Image 1 (cartoon, helix red, strand yellow):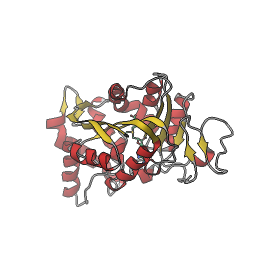
Image 2 (image 1 turned 90 degrees about the vertical axis):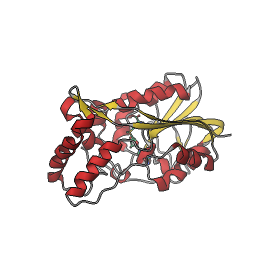
Image 3 (image 1 turned 45 degrees about the vertical axis):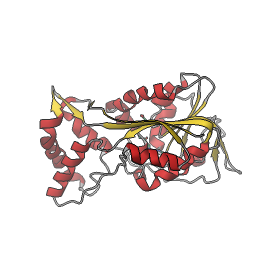
Image 4 (image 1 turned 30 degrees about the vertical axis):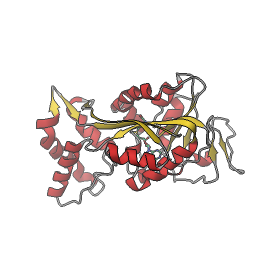
Amino acid sequence: MTDPERPETGHDDAEIAGNGRISADGGNDDEAGDGWDSETRGGSDAEAGNVWDADEYDGDHSFVYEYGADLLGLLEPAPEERILDLGCGTGHLTAQVAESGAHVVGVDRSASMLETASGSHPEHPFVVADARALPLASGFDAAFSNAALHWIDATDQDAVLAGVHDSLAPEGRFVGELGGLGNVGAIVDAVGAELGRRGYETGTPWYFPSIGEYATRLERAGFEVRHARLFDRPTPLEDGEDGLRNWLEMFGDGLFAAVPADEREGVYRAVEDRLRPTLYGDARWIADYRRLRFLAVRP
Ligand SMILES: C[S@@+](CC[C@H](N)C(=O)[O-])C[C@H]1O[C@@H](n2cnc3c(N)ncnc32)[C@H](O)[C@@H]1O
């Protein structure tokens, strides 16, 4: 895993327009004209609860955006629309949304994920920014988010939704998918039991809401909820026998924060033993994903 490479830098006065350009009072030094302001090239991955390794993500965990592609059917992007991809990661879905002819801006707080996004899709603007304090201009036709919102604390969700609401034009839509109530419940329980046995405190780094909870938040933020669905999506992990271990390494920084590095291997093995009877078969692991998908509109 990579270390967070740069300190976070704020850009309270900056504003991201639909074309990805950043305007601010004296704050735009985007000399390269690529939509990146050197001031915004910060971003502390670690503070987000997980250190994001873009190569590992694209290598072994591409299922996240491959499943997310399904969500585009709900977004229905149209030519010339201005669309925000919130928590865009390495930008694969950003690029797919843009295939519709829409102008898409990818936003993520991880500088390393965005470096990969920008390298793979240089034709689209990517901006390092935190969803909890979006420096966005208003007037987007839609906002889109796949597998990012559950990385943000419950206490910060209202700020995220207020920011998205303000960034949208009237009739603008917000389409998202995140882990829903009970997501990876068997994995969380097995990790909790193993860490408890070893005397560590346990907790989860994710926010997995029910439909009722998230729809209520959306309504409180001023959205009209037009669609919400909670569904099981058992998800095969790549890399055969190593699949679960790799998943825990990629996404589990927050779960294992208290465990010293030299003890983690033993914990992973013990968690595998606990889960093998229920989540392993035909030489692959199947994670017990449950997703919450929604479409909400700013009236
Ligand atoms: C599992 S990845 C999903 C990436 C992409 N949407 C996809 O479908 O491949 C989660 C992303 O959410 C981003 N993220 C987490 N917290 C964030 C925040 N507060 N603001 C912006 N991005 C955030 C992470 O940096 C990471 O790139």
